[in-house]
Image (cartoon, rainbow over all chains, first blue to last red; front, side, top):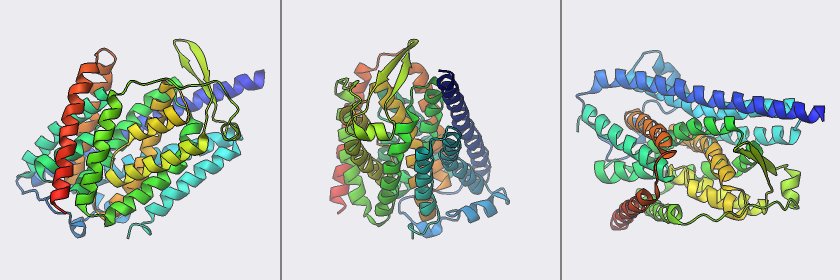
Length: 131
Length: 277
């Protein structure tokens, strides 16, 4: 009985932490996008947009390394892209947290499942499949 | 068009898409993509990249609230995420090689399907029969709180649900949408979960699924900051306003009007796709 109660309390704590993690991830990354957007608009408001044809070769921030380099220059588009990267990492961080919490609960099957999901994302992250 | 004007138009459009998407349960992504491609002439590859970013933002934002309430079944969510992430990565890779016209046609078909699904009356298939051996092995059966009472439920046909999720993930990666309609079919009709659990768990899974395809899109240069910025800010603010209004408003009539508009958009996308072949 007491063990069961402890488990329930544990589950509840995990849910609250998970919720907070997701919410703060969204708020932080969207604030960065907003700041980047402001810088971007100040510098580029007059330029002409052209998105009629997909030109992947023109995109300057299409890798994590390029985004990190770009964000140090405070270019608006780089800051936006950095915010988007943070946003992409929010659900990934959620998986990492879930792995830890299942580890505490000694639910090793779900630790394994968490690692499988991480592995799938890491494979696609490495870009090996994307090129 | 100047960058400033483009940003303002997209911001307003994305706000509307997010608002209507959350009021009708259709999601913001399926509305912003036709808007960008049909009204502003943006290449569908860019539109998809921007939309997937907004899917991560809205689903993570609303999942935060549901998870805290304890309705989301985190085990079911994580178990099925294996299927949706594999699907999403495959879909995103296929999208790279697929002609924009084919993507537009597939998108139109899914759009019509989703519109029909929002109009269909939901039937509760939930069950207490906890004899499914997969559900027991993965410990998927659970309970959720409703007005202070814990309701138990059991999960059926796990392999069927898993396969459907693989398909939902593929479409999500291919089209840059959350594909909530398909996820709910997999969980309501096949795995027989109660609505509250299936909708919140589908939302919970959307963020990870979208993140898996977003990394592929990012490497491909499909996520352009100039489009993604107004889209994700607009959709997120619209969707958060929508979720607040939703508790008070009756949405039945809105759903019908909206389904007609969406079907019209879908037909236009299919027409554009076919005439471009």
